[in-house]
Image (cartoon, rainbow, N blue to C red; front, side):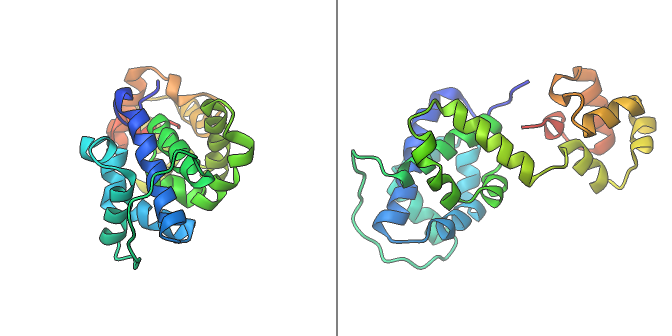
Length: 213
């Protein structure tokens, strides 16, 4: 059950915009990639981009996106003319690939960049830039699971201060099934819709909030 962040028709443009934004911030403005990554992650612009707001994924160029991020987060920089080169840098590829991964996974940029900072994505360039993007996605999935070993179901249950037994009793979902979901021995993404509905009601969240990336 894959739920992408926004319509697929925007993804190519979104990749180009974020690629140019990272390239402009790091190469043209001389910012540290992780400093820009942190600014981007906490900015409102990243939330708008992640949700597929057309203004952000289609209605501006990458240089403008970078400037908006830096202005929103009060990050000092010395502006320069727009620069979007035909020869793509590792920095461009990092933004381009990360935009795809965010769209594919539906994760927030703050979750992604907290686990895998821009500098690490840039270091992946020699190995992954000529591969199919799905191989980059597979590698990111491994890194994200290493960074967030707890399932979303377990994290939500703990937040709600419920034991597995309490969740089972409240939701009507079998205790053993909950245990298997939390141990990743059963894929919650393949669970019946009624099971997800019962769990989400008990945990006061949306059904998709329990799905694994």
